[in-house]
Length: 209
Figure 1 (cartoon, helix red, strand yellow):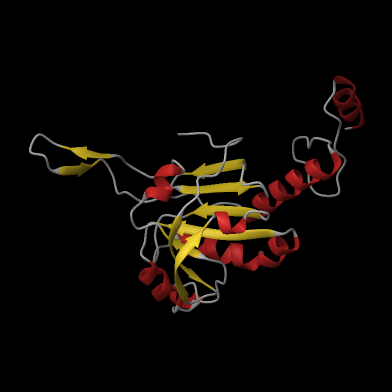
Figure 2: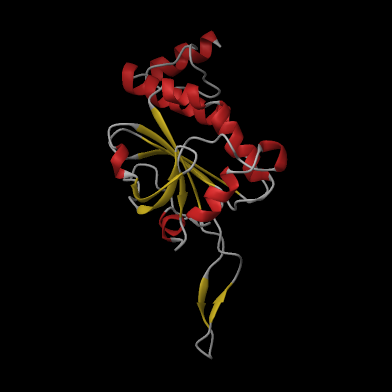
């Protein structure tokens, strides 16, 4: 699994559904340069863990927006599939009410470039294409800064849902470091004390905790 932290986030141009129902054909990551982005991948539309995650991000969207963060979701489904799922109510297992963009990675290149694509593919002796598993995205999450650099990444296996509050905590930690120059120790949360990146700073922090 590739580590993208410290590198430029791979750009892409793809079809997407925005504002809960409008299909666009020229959606890019680079259009959000100058903003923080939380880009997250999920396996499939019309499934089980996925809608819980999508709704959980929507429930916290005001907190992300207050921090200047753009949420973007990606799966390997088509934009038509995204649109159809957005028409279904929450109590039917749908995602009606989601307002952040859903990107359609139908050719799987975005998932591949972020190294979150489940399975590999190739050709057998009869020159027939084969895949080792279903080519869908793992639950990858990438925190991208204003310059387009990946600063945090997390990849969960297919059955394991994410903690949205942890994504917010990582945004807070990044922004605190950028604004104050101090580093954030284990279990740091917004409003807690941090420390200078020095032996003296570590010693002082540990002595106080």
